[in-house]
Image (cartoon, rainbow, N blue to C red):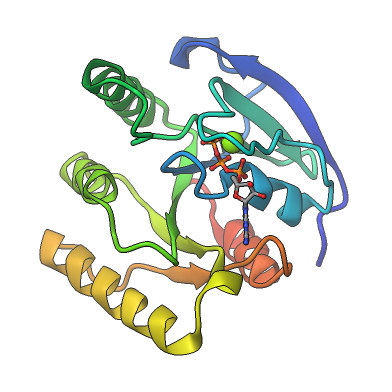
Length: 197
Ligand SMILES: Nc1nc2c(ncn2[C@@H]2O[C@H](COP(=O)(O)OP(=O)(O)OP(=O)(O)O)[C@@H](O)[C@H]2O)c(=O)[nH]1
Ligand SMILES: [Mg+2]
């Protein structure tokens, strides 16, 4: 079922500035330019709800979108963009960890990973951080319009192996292309199943 209503609620500079009204949160995160904002637009069927950038680093704030008056999609600034300094990257990781471990409205974290690039060091570091913190997460392989089936299959296997090596079995991996609107129904169905336990 498509999303009925989607609205931008606010941008936060800091984790403690989230909206007063609380709803379950689905965090959308991943490296800069992986397609986080594009996925939010594809999921909601609204082309310009979240700002999409040609240059990596477009989303610099935490943006809250209220979906069907029942949950937030939270667009996080990207990590691992090469032009950011090491100090900036580590500040980002600290902020992220702080937010994710303190907020108990989080029902799932969608970690977006680019299907047409090999798994990056920053992705590995971030997945490790989530496992170490005992946080729930799922993986969305983005931009699948840019790879063939065989490459996608190998990427998926490698990811599964890495995540189970970290100690998490049966992690959900969904393939999407925001350009072709592929996989968006699957993501929506999956998001709707997530409830606070
Ligand atoms: N081919 C293809 N390009 C995509 C897809 N999704 C996003 N892009 C492109 O990738 C670039 C980055 O997309 P964004 O959605 O802004 O990525 P982001 O992860 O929000 O980036 P930051 O906000 O900078 O962290 C844009 O040029 C998009 O048009 C996709 O499914 N397929
Ligand atoms: Mg963005």
